[in-house]
View 1 (cartoon, helix red, strand yellow):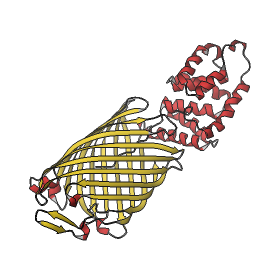
View 2 (cartoon, helix red, strand yellow):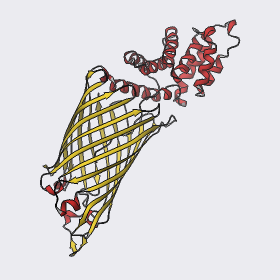
View 3 (tube, rainbow, N blue to C red):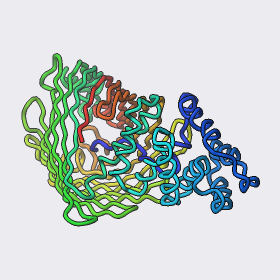
View 4 (spheres, rainbow, N blue to C red):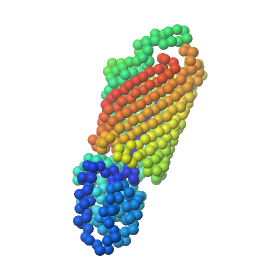
Length: 465
């Protein structure tokens, strides 16, 4: 199974700046809000309108009610500094983007140094996909050295702006990563020193038993997106990774790969079809080649919910063991759900099924390669602090093989479990630094294939875009 992306929610209309305030941030913003009362002269016509009520509703997150009240008093109070500020925030939060932007433009025109209003205005332009103006306002606030939580949120928006720039120009992105750690089972082998077979007990060679070692890992990857016409992009990428061991060099691994395809999209959905190629290395020598084609479809169902579907077929060829050559088919479906709470958690869940068909028709190929596959995946993304995130993933995969293994007198069945946890510190939008832990348990009814494995390492990644 290949690596999968981590659940990371994009900025959404209802998790904007107003709704994600922290106590530290309020210390930065409240003085500006309080000062508004001193900037608005008394208006006899406004006796029926309580400006503080709008402020309280905004602070409580009751944007729908605030917007309704603002509309009731719009004719009498439009153009007043404090009214426009709260009316603009409420309009953005209920999806009336142009109304909100116009109101906040009036506020910023009167008071260019009021960063809270400029921040909300930048978010409005972002939601309208006017990236040039959104970037200008975000960068204007950054120049005033806002508190860390506000700065982190602005950097998230700027990153999202950069990533969707491929709508209208060729863009490139990628990363370089280096890490080091320890692997308790570098060869994914059993901890037993012997196994029972139909001909008796067989003593295993030391290299067929569990080996541990320290490692250093390097990875580099890049991608490009080129718009062919509105809604259609040519996409491609390439990458390599290499893992070196301190002692057991014969188990050193690495790979090079590439992909090329087309992406079709509209405002709420994305479809990508692409071809892939990979060469996997063991001990510096070619071990396995992969050629495949995949298709994926994702659709945004709401501000917080998305659906993902995928299919792929791959041809696998092994240099030294043709009985492992096969065709692998996989189908998967899942969803992602974000929650508008303080930690901004996002959950994902999915199921997949597939089959691996052996190219050869020998008893060994049918017993060790041909199988049916069924599994599920779960994911969690959570903000721990303004620059710290927690990512957790779990995968379960059940495999049933086609024929009895004659040496062991059983038909093989695998229950494979993989759990990963990582903590990321992001000092800025480009760097990601932190520890990662992975635990694997392959529970098999034939002991020689049964193993456990724990990998722990620290890595630093630099992302460019």
